[in-house]
Length: 319
Image 1 (tube, one colour):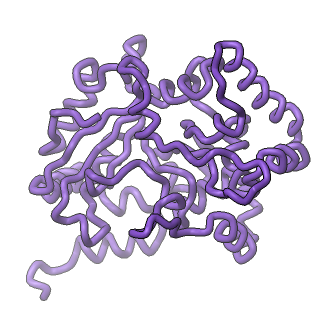
Image 2: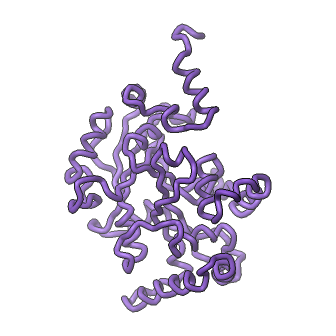
Image 3: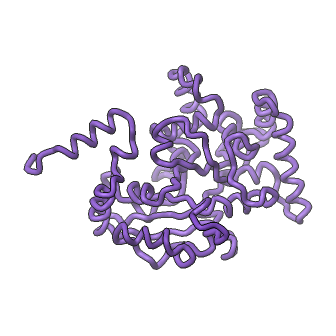
């Protein structure tokens, strides 16, 4: 998956966006003259996999977080957000941006924003590590998950998104269906569409069951309900699946993006990546700052604005 092309400055990222047929071959839709449906993500260590935080494990291969209880607890202590965030997926978007581990991965429509996150080194142990910039074709990902949709980007109200989000609340397939049926206005139609997808697969001699298909990730264009999502041009992938072996009818375990990509033949792959050597990270961050891509531009909340001002005006000889 790794490209031989290394990013050593902002000019190299502009080259990737400009020379799409060369650097994003297979992802780029040459019927348009811009990067429609190509999303970007920066990670501070090139060795990190594309695993949502809530599914990450410790050194003993044990899950670190209790997804169900975390999600319920934060809703109980911050009920005022229900006035704006009405669905489980909208809550996940909110919580993802404010640090709670979720089954979402952040992506951006802006390649420079993703580059900033790759070189920002907010984690202390990544300063000496090469970083990585990912490019994802949202249309190709969704085409592989559900060919009948012809690669369209999912919206928050689509059945594929609702089902994956609600796994947070119900990891048993039949209880999941009951929840969707009673909690959503068109719940029966949503469940019917999900079942129809699997029938279409079976017509094409595919043996996968619905609880297996719901382990796949999909790409979603969210409602941008807060300024941070607007500033960062936020889009998401949402993982399906669940680690709930005690459920009577459990949904399959999550299938991660990079693992799904590896399983596909060359023409169907939806991911590419580029390495950023660690010795260039500080230089790139300075270049981005001069272009107006910095903490103050991407994080509108007051605490981040004051942090940006502190760094900007700190005297150079400060101990």
